Amino acid sequence: MSTQEIKKKAQLLKMLSHPTRLLILEELAKGVRCVGEIEELLQVSQANVSQHLALLRYEQVVDYHEEGNLRCYYLKKQEFVQALFNFLAKEYPTVEKSKAELKQEKAARNSCPADVPLGDGKPLLQMSEEEIKLAVAERYSQVAQNPQAKFNFPVGRKFAESVGYPPELLSSLPEGMWQSFTGAGNPQAYVDVRAGECLLDLGCGAGLDLYLYARKVGKSGRLYGLDLSEAMLSKAQANLTALGIENCHFISAPADRIPLEAGSMDIVTSNGIYNLSPNKEAVLREVFRVLKPGGRTIFSEVVLSAPLPEEVRKNINDWFRCIGGAMPEAGFLELMHRVGFVRAEVLHKERNARCGHQLAICANIKAYKP
Image (tube, rainbow, N blue to C red; front, side, top):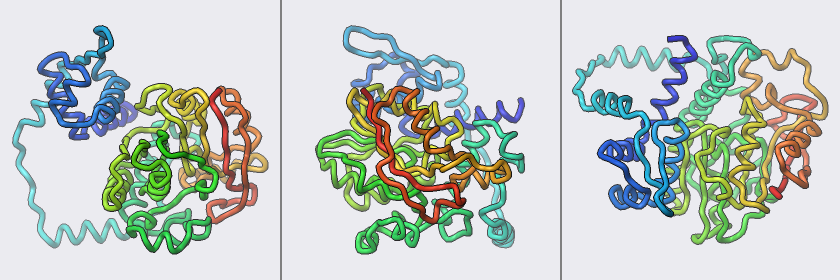
């Protein structure tokens, strides 16, 4: 297999690694099931089951046919699923390592600074979209697991305070919620989410923004946090659970393939996701798709006052700091209109520590789905 094929299969296996998805596949291996039956069998909420089924269907592992008002799901790749469960059923010997070996491996990891280029050292222009997404997931997993490491973009409480998150608020939250904070800015003053609404936060990170939205939507609302890094998602879930937030669902998926139904969200927000996405138009089209008619998207993003010189777009580290993938402000708004959004506008702009180039500025942007 080629490197690209291996990476695609690795992504598929990563998607299948979620325990609920495996349980769903186990049930479908026994026969056709509707969403309600799976919900009852697994004791999982219908919304949660529907999310997992949507992602499995997107990857063409399952499909459905309709019987009246019911969607009945079945396995589309039966041999593949059977081979997967055969593999999981086997017992494999473990390899014990001495303390000296483990210490040596740890020293080797710690000696590697976090700003070493990923992507096999390729120039940024030679990397495929999938390679960029894999590199982003790896780098931001490092931010989740080791936020004290050295990165070429701001991380943590000091940066959160500098963009307007109140120190007294941060002091009242679990440290894990702000230790790995690394947004483009602070969209909180502009995200006008109301009680009872459904909100999706793209690139939710460790959950700081999600928690603040949870306080606004209340128990009658629904929240969805999507992130490409499972380490970030795990951290966000732990943080929100510790704070008693029970109406938030977490989705492990790229932003250009959102496993949610069309027209299901009142509002979609984000804090620096577009410049980490190699196909911004695809992400915007997905945001447009999942919004209800009349719904809105409000987010923070680094934009440019003029196109960047090519010398600052050389490697993936330029991408991580939200510069290598940044677009001029006018071009970004034009792209939003081309996708179908109306009344796209910049609500506020200011420079912060995330704006690592003189042409860069953080903008809070809002637009509507007609």
